[in-house]
Image (cartoon, rainbow, N blue to C red; front, side):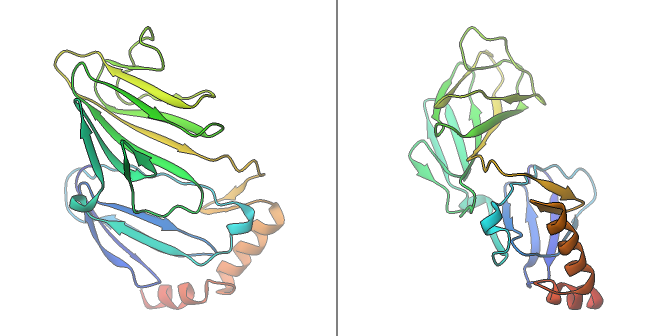
Amino acid sequence: MLQGAMTHEDFQGHKGTIGAGDLQWMTAGKGIVHSEMPASHGTQHGLQLWINLSSKHKMIEPRYQEVHNNDVVEAKKDGVKVRVIAGEAMGKRSPIYTKTPTMYLDFTLDPGSHIEQPIPVGWNAFVYVLEGEDGVFGSVKSMPIASHHILLLGSGDGLEAWNKSSSEALRFILVGGEPLNESVVQMGPFVMNTEEEIDQTIEDFENGTNGFERAKHWSSQA
């Protein structure tokens, strides 16, 4: 959450409210029903990332992880701050466990500062700029990128970024992950590898079977 607060609950008994700076990481596995609603009036601003599970992990048990703002791992050096949501940066590692190897880093660069962040070779990665109008990425000669733009990164082993502003901070997230190289079939909130698996998943959900038994009971009591 970047601003505001959200109240959440799922059929495994996890519930509560996350506020600005808090994070939750949910692994759906073989199925989990989850609800979330704004906890207050006004603006609710956050980021949500969906990461695919490999076919061999699609039916693992669901898992929920939550970290409050004060416990999010941070590092600061030479005008650069990073909040390590997942993965590792500047010698700090997040406690969040990701079944699919993933990095999720929230960088803030003071005016004039510069960062070099390694990315494992072969991973897919992107940058999304949250704040700032003079972020330069990849090469110091690149054109500046303003807020609310996304950059899909090419092959390589890292990212360089500069804040060319003389007065404003630059904030962006760097997200990367190991490619699965598997077919993807999606319908609504369900993501599987084949049409047959999607059909079976929907049938399981509607009938309350194969991991959705507790979900059916929970929704009937809601």
